[in-house]
Amino acid sequence: MEAYAIIQHGRPLEKVSRPTPVPVGREVLVAVTHSGICHSDLHVIEGHYDLGSRGDLELGKRGLTLPLIPGHEVVGKVVSWGPEADGQGLVAGDLKLVFPWVGCGECSRCRADEQNLCLSTRPMGLVTDGGYGTHVLVSDPKYLLDIEGLDPAVAATYACSGVTVFSAIRKLMPLDHAETIVVIGAGGLGLNAISLLRALGHERICAVDTGQSKLDAAVAQGAASVVLADGDSASTVAKIAAACDGRVFSIIDTVNASPTAEFAFDALSKGGKLVQVGLFGGELKLPLPLMPAKSATLQGSYVGGLAELREVVSLAKQGLMPAIPVTPRNLDDVNEALDELRDGRVIGRMVIVLDADHQHPAGAIAGATVGEE
Ligand SMILES: [Zn+2]
Ligand SMILES: [Zn+2]
Image 1 (cartoon, rainbow, N blue to C red):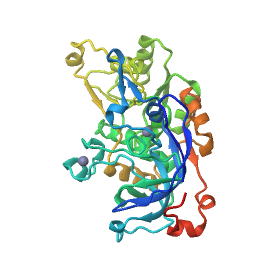
Image 2 (cartoon, protein in one colour):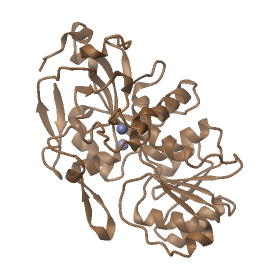
Image 3 (tube, rainbow, N blue to C red):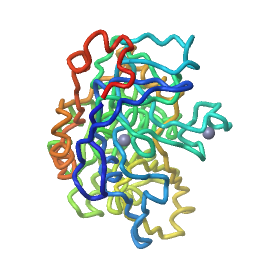
Image 4 (cartoon, protein in one colour):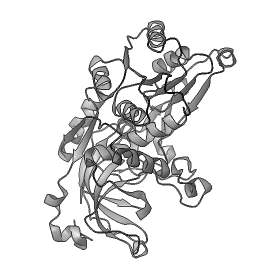
């Protein structure tokens, strides 16, 4: 198999050639056809998160070891599986969406399909090798979801950006459809948030971003109003308040950098809730009396569980989710694509598209690729 791996943090990914893994136990080998490029991949490549005045959080202390193949928004075709996965309905050649937020499988969170809250999580593309390559090893057949009828390039984005914002939206519910929901950031996460809110019947969506082209994409996705964040916190707060008729009860921050967290908190009306999902980094300094005075709720939300991803896929299959814009990229152009993402030049999501049928002759897809280079 071939892949692009992090060999050294802060350096471009390097192409690697390895023996294709042989699935054992309950593992399933999948030939990647689509692999989304997520903003958090940039953090994985850099090797740290910005904790503001506390310095950096080194991902090496959180289970990340190199070399690592990133990529956690994966769709691919089932190739072969270990003996314990027999009888699980696997069919060679079937196209599946991979749930990447793998848990220990034993704890109460995992048993409730809330693997994202497992204390011993082993996420694909962050701890184990992910989808920036021709093949990926999935630890259990239960992490493969059927996406029949869906555009696989768009479905790939549901594994991270889709399920992440769905989990965040659930934390804001129940909310009257007459109230406005503010979505900060109109990248892959923000656009999928707008798509999901529309699927759930919410039309009063206000998108906030620093780029007009991203706000245009937000309107095309279904946002009812937009706010161009101009770098001045007070004026951004005033614009958000105006867009919400002074009733700012629900904000999802898909960026979650120091400036967005500050204007989001300041914009909250009494009784409002801010759900923080972005990993951009920095810190938020809060005037403490304002927490009780506003009766504010701040809640973090980290990706999503298998049960939530099933719900996202179900909404998409019902035709309720307008597809976000997807730009196909070649695997060999992944470093250029990451540069474009770092520079903020991407509308929607870039998805690496591999022609699995071309790379793997029909016989190989049927299960003969075990041990293939
Ligand atoms: Zn667990
Ligand atoms: Zn992601």
